[in-house]
Image: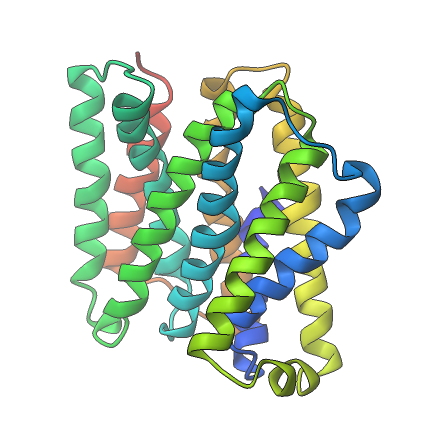
Length: 273
């Protein structure tokens, strides 16, 4: 969770060095793919997992990372983006209801509502007047992260290196094409990336996308999602603390109030049936 929390301020540092957001997401996924090829060895998963693996790879490798970078790119304040990512849990529960046909109890519906209410309170923070586009992209990031977690439940029998390598493959190919079409001058942009920015991208690929995610998938083999997912409530704390250390961000009263509601709702969502 420390690694997950650090991903946001680290990505913002790279974006501040003029790295295009979509290109940065594609390079991150490309590095993940390169590192995992010796472990993956281009093995093809059983046919019954193929659709779930594609949906997971696109949700996590493309949508989550591109919307994460866009949310940070269009925001001057990082902490609300970090907290907004917590909506992945209520989004995940809603997605599990539609995709896996899981029942949502009355208490869970109340907590889902209160988690969105907490985000709404944060929206009234005057400091966020110029950050609504970033918060919109953060909401989309949370939506696709929740979807990815639902599909990950269907992939727990697959080797984690295969899952992450496929995520890197889909993420790199799709995002590099989108970057070329939208941001343009792909080769020139890559050549202009400074050493410091490359180190930040390597950090995201190795520490966050590989180490943190591989550890989470490893835990999924031995514990239920309900036991593991609540720990995601911790990474905003680490992320907001690092944002204060690196950028000097001091949370406002409305942010603290809304944040407490969101995190409390998310914790309770994983404790009740």
